[in-house]
Amino acid sequence: MHHSPASDAAKSDSAYPSPPRVHWTVILLLLASAEALVLWLFPSPYRNFASYVVAAAWPTYLCIWVRNVDPRSSSLYWAVASLVMGFGFLFSWLLWIVVIFELREELLDHYNRREAIPLRLNFYLTLFFSFIYFQYALNKIAHEKHLLVHPVTAEPQSSVIA
Picture (cartoon, rainbow, N blue to C red):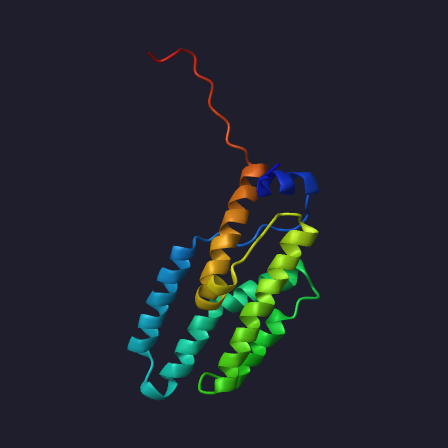
């Protein structure tokens, strides 16, 4: 028998906060707009680092959110280490790959074990679309949790429409 994530979340009566409820296309559009502003506003010597910081803003926010949900999570430390290393070093990009897969494991652990919401994240989609893909999955969970707290009710009608 298949259970929906919403019914599993209702059974668990979780005290955990809902994930950020932002549609993935909004994040993608904001990221593209912010990157365009960086290219337009920042002079050449600072443009690469500013672009890197803008691209790392949402992933770092997700790491902070996971850290609030699970104080033992370590993805935030890896994200900060990558930011400190800067844009130009290959090592900083390798650290972001560590951040991506560390955050993936933390999300899977949290939702599959603590909240009993079945979450599956595809390896290849994680590799190629990382934080946009995470937000796609988290937005679905946030929407279902919102419906549990604020169920949609039909308004009573006084007459039947023919």
